[in-house]
Length: 78
Image (cartoon, rainbow, N blue to C red; front, side, top):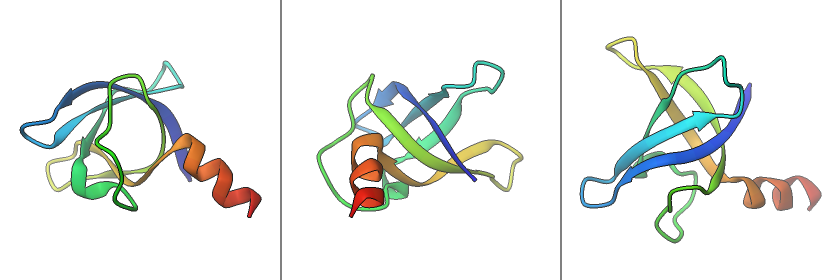
């Protein structure tokens, strides 16, 4: 199941940040630059993202197969 949210914090020098899901009942999700589905411009705070959530080895929520929401919409239309 895919989730949607916005990038609320990004540390470009370290290549990671955090997503706040659109569902306010869910906690922030860790995002690493390598978890984007394809290369593109660096993410910016406030951009809408579509992603899958997994639990990492320490039990924390982590985003995988991340795409900018506009990219996901165009993929579905083609």
